[in-house]
Length: 491
Image (tube, rainbow, N blue to C red; front, side):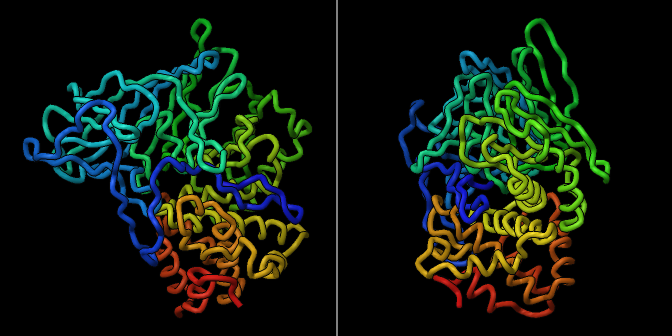
């Protein structure tokens, strides 16, 4: 993700976009890598909460993944392997009708389990073809199958739901979730917005493959993640089927519905590039920015290693005037007002850092944004502009009371801080300090090796620092203590 506030002649990564103030956030005072608990609270709006007693040998799955900042996001007791989402959307009324088929494996004996879904009504649900009891309580959707699920068993849940998806507004006024536009909608999921348009285990620790099928009026199009498997028209409706084979966290899943000019090409490495340009946005009409996409891809593969997915591209939309771009997997979503080469570089770098290698918790956000911001610095360095050292020096010259030094990048104080300046810019400065410590040749190998070592997986800050020290052959505590975890401006 990158914000669209311009400073010093470039887009600064200081957005606090897409945060949900309504969700309780834990303090980040547990120390390095600690897991905040955060108890669930709130009235049951659908009647008495399902009892927590043992049910035919099983126990209810946890209603949250106990993330340090969003303890209610995600759920415990199962692991999702695949989502098949079938959606029908009417841009005029804003009504969405959906079926979510969720294939998962129980990681505990379960009498019931939870999904995250906010603002939409569940009509019915089944587990392994049998009707399940349904309870909705705020963002928590609880399904109780007629027979308990044994640990290690695979199961399939089908949820039928509908309603008018709502955007989620946090305390800074920026929105995420399902955002209506003049002729469609765009889904922005980071960090909590995906629960506004489909039920799921909405925490980055549980990635899955996806099939997303969307039916819309035939005069508009539906763009999503991955590869377009099929497009068909029936009467006045058109259906688009997108397939994302590689694992994807739900917060980088997207659907964009509107009037688009579809541009296709291929990179030199053979990756198909499919980009969707909003025809009403009046941006990049000469193709100057989009025309550089294959060049940027080739550069990124040279810097970061083989591209981790089967397709690439961008979605450029007015996006309900949101002031930030988002690294939606395979096809970053960038508002028309922010469609610049720098943003394309940033969001493309996220395909390696954030999408293929996904943070284990939201506390590890700096691993995404520090690397993507540093990619911007590398791009200008490699293309005749300011060097990474120039960027570092300019930022380090800022006064000690500048926002950049408000907190260490690995320990944002609250959920509202995970997309602030220290996570982005000071995170990039951590990467540069590593480069200084190991030298350019070893740094190049390290930056290529890290996403390959965790390809399509997860990583914590501790995983990364251990990897760097193993490659460096020595501890780098002076960097971690001063730049990653230290308070205030490092000397």
